[in-house]
Length: 314
Image 1 (cartoon, rainbow, N blue to C red):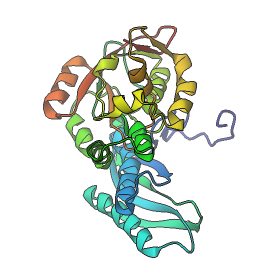
Image 2 (image 1 turned 120 degrees about the vertical axis):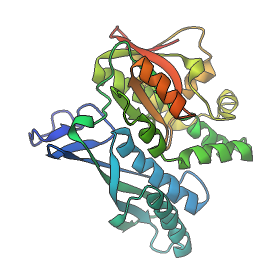
Image 3 (image 1 turned 60 degrees about the vertical axis):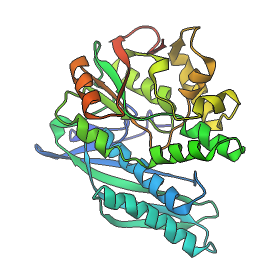
Image 4 (image 1 turned 90 degrees about the vertical axis):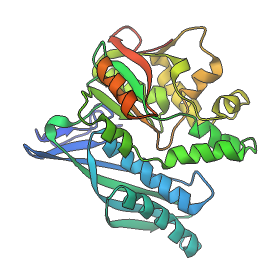
């Protein structure tokens, strides 16, 4: 719906919606720009405190993906007017716990009466205008690096179907609760050409956005993409969330997979993630340094000159 909508032309808008980036960036001065993002969703776990904390980590992630530092948050809440207020308080406390961890004060928010619970945040951050990371800067010859494991959507679906083990669910929740702050801080001082966080559109959906925005082709080595424990088995058992099918329908026309790629693994690359990791495009020498600095960082591919398909799965 966005193409053709009227908009205000402003040279201080450094990143808008045109490249489907993780956040907007607005220059305030030669030394400071605002990073602005918003994200909220319905419960993805049963525990209300954990749900609130995951929602906060997910919203904060977009600022880290732009190379920014979150400075304030506004909460967004939809909750039944006759709902249990003790449960609501746990949701808010969970979110507050992550905001405290991120040193990001909650300065207000807005709530509405709604039978379907939804919770999240609008986050404002800051970044130097010359040091913004976008999804449009990947360069041929770069190495692709990823900082978390994927499979949260499939594991959540497996849990709903009674297939998931407690240990696998625990690993998935632990991943979603992990702030991308550590990964962003480890990248500081390295030459980051392109960056995006892997969330609702799945690994290949967000890789597609990076490839198109940068006018390159990304070569992904499927077997190197780190997976959460149990995710591949659950995908083979058919625990496929509806969002995965939507992502595949949307992104697959841009994807050229080798015939030897495991079909279940290819499915996982479309799996919608919550509070996923950072996909980073950077020179090979800096990718090696990042892997030394940050234990979870894994090299998953490379950037090539643009070909017919923007994504090649090897």
